[in-house]
Image 1 (cartoon, rainbow, N blue to C red):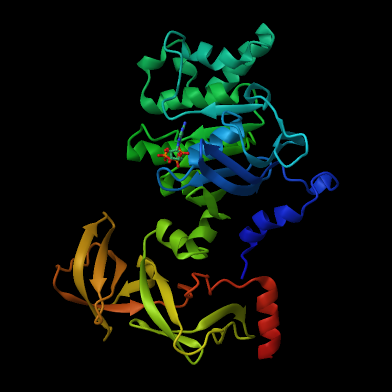
Image 2: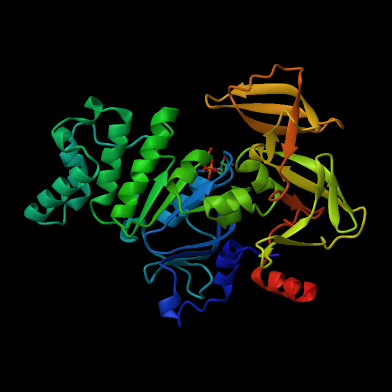
Length: 405
Ligand SMILES: Nc1ncnc2c1ncn2[C@@H]1O[C@H](COP(=O)(O)OP(=O)(O)OP(=O)(O)O)[C@@H](O)[C@H]1O
C-alpha cells in the first residue's frame, strides 16, 4: 500500500535526472549515507523539495538530523548517494569519479540554534556580513530590505546583546537570507526560546520564507514547530527517513506505528479480524474506502486479513467523544488541564487505555466513570507487519470499487 508521499520519495529512484530536466526537482537527496568512524549515522536518505518548499527533519535526539543537515551543507563528507540543487550536482558518490562541491560554493545559508551573531557588530553590519562582493549601494539597499523583512528597521544600529532572543534569531535569519541563498538550512533555530515565542516565531519565519520564495530545510525535535513551519516533514528514526509527507498526511496517514505514536497524541489499542472487520474494545471497525455512493454515503469493504489476525488501532484523543447519554463508559484514570480542554486518560472495561479531549467545563474527577462515544470512522489500523492497512493507493481503490460493483 502506498501513499502519494511515499511515491514522491521512492519514485525518485526511477527519475533519470540527466534527461528529464523539466521534471527534475529543485532539490534532491538520493540514498545519502553519512557516518563517523565505523558508525553509519544517516542511512539511505532520499527526498525532494520543489523551489520555495520548506522541508523538515523531525526525530528523537541522536537520530541523525543534524548530521544529515551538515552533509547537505557539505560540512560532513557523504559516504554514499547524491545531492542536487538547482541543476547543480553538489555531491555524487555513485559516479565513477566521486565529486563534492565545497561548502562555500553550495549557495546555502545557515541559521543555528545559538544565532552565531557577531557581538561587536551592529544588527545592520551583521546582516551585511555575507555581502562583501556586492557594491556598496546594492549592499545598503539589501540590508534595508532585510531589516524591513524581519521588522527590525528601528534596531539597525543596536548590538545583538541589546535585543531579545526572538529578535536576535530574526537578525540571524536576515543575515542568512541577505545573499539570496539557493537553500536555507535551519538547525533547531528556536530551541533557545521559550515555548510561546517559539510557535509565533515559527509562524513568522514561515511567512518570511514564503514571501521570499526560499527553499529551506529545518531540523527540530519539536513537532509543533515542524507543523507550524514546514510543507513536508520527514520523520527520522535511527538514520532513516521513515516517512516524508505533509503534516496532515503524517497525522492522518502515518505509515507505521512508530510515526503514529511520534506524531500527535493517541493510544494504540488491540483489535482482531473477524469476517473482514476489526473487533475492538471500542466496537467494530469497518474498512472505509473514501468512495461515496449517489446519496453521499461512504462505501465499506472487508479487510484483506484472515480471521484471528491481530491488529493495532491508533485512537486519537478527538476520536473519543464524551457523551453523558452514552451507555458505553470508561474510568477516568488521569487528566491534564489544557485551558479550553481537559485531556482525559480513560481506562476501558478490558483494562486498555485511550485519551479523550473534553471541553474543560466538563470537570470529571479521577476515579469516576464517564460516557464515551467512539468515532471509529477514520482511525488508522496497522497489521502485524506494521503496515498501515487504512491507506488506499488510487489503483488499489479503483480495483476494489470495480470488484464491489
Ligand atoms: N562529530 C561526531 N563524531 C562522532 N559521532 C557523532 C558526531 N556528531 C554526532 N555524532 C553521533 O551521531 C549520532 C547522530 O547525531 P546527530 O547530532 O546527527 O543527531 P540529532 O538527531 O541531530 O540529535 P539532536 O536532536 O540531539 O541534536 C549520535 O549518536 C551522535 O552521538
